[in-house]
Length: 145
Image 1 (cartoon, rainbow, N blue to C red):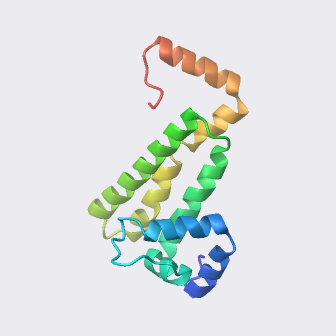
Image 2 (image 1 turned 90 degrees about the vertical axis):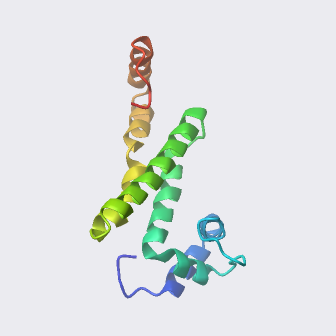
C-alpha cells in the first residue's frame, strides 16, 4: 500500500478476499460521512472514494479491534474513546495543519492508538493493573486520565 503506483483494483481485490473488511469498507462509504445519493456496492468504487490513506486508517481500526481481543465493557469504552480521539485528532490536524500533509495523514492513527498501551499492560500484567485501578479509585483519579 505504500507503493504510489498501486492500482485501486488490486487493493479492492485484496479487500474482497476478506468478507469482514469488505463489509466495513462498504459500511463506511455508505455512511452519512460520504452522503451518497445512492448506495455504493462496488468495492473498487469504495476504495476510490476512501482513498489509500482512508484504507490504511480502516485497516488500523480493524486490527486495533483484534488487538483488544475479548469484548468487555471496559474495552468497549476504550474503543469508543479511541475512535472519538481519532476523529477529533484528524479534524484538528486538518484544520490547523492543512499545509503539513504528513501530520494530517497520521493524526487519525495516532488518535486511534494513543491508549493501546493500556490494553497491552492490562493483558500482560493484570494484577498490577488491578492495584493501579484500586489506587486510582481510592484517590478519586479518573481511569481515563
